[in-house]
Length: 103
Image 1 (spheres, rainbow, N blue to C red):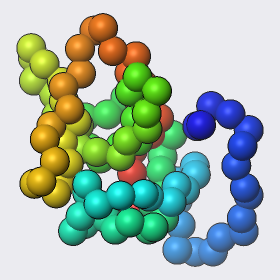
Image 2 (image 1 turned 30 degrees about the vertical axis):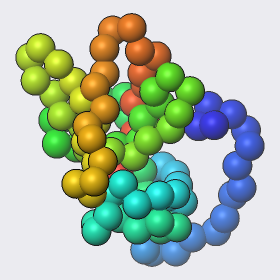
Image 3 (image 1 turned 135 degrees about the vertical axis):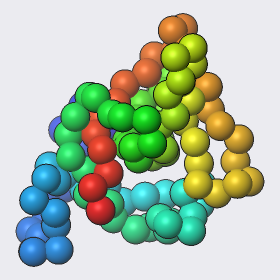
């Protein structure tokens, strides 16, 4: 969905961080309590994230907003809500980084 042209443009004000390239309305509770279902987050478009960054990701046909956890021998996506398990990323996965959450 982030590669397509199915989106709506909306005029925004000074609440948007300067680094932001786009906003996304969140769906779900996996990143509560910091991020809430229905909240709009602002995203800086980038394909490179550091360990601990919260980003927007594509993984095997699904989109996620999660915290990236990188170790020398593995990578995983972490929810802030402890009721969700980490999602491991392997070389076999179709995985892409769309950006860093900046709000």
